[in-house]
Length: 108
Image (cartoon, rainbow, N blue to C red):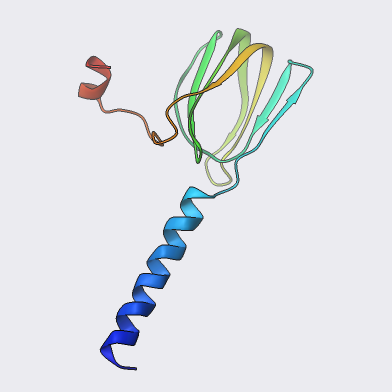
């Protein structure tokens, strides 16, 4: 293989990896506003009984309600189950896929 073909092959491989990470599967299943299953979770910033702030392959996601409980969280599969009285599900910035640093949170 000549040098041009090697470079093109490396570029194609990199493009496939970038496409896969941006288009990774993300689903939400909401059952009667009491149970919620989320796939494509990449990180969880924080959660309490009123708010769950998490990051998905599609960006930031905030779940608000009362008596919220995170029942299952699988880092390997990126799946999370939440139970409680779910009042709202709001997507944030689609380009934010991970939490801010400590300095970033101060100036947020």
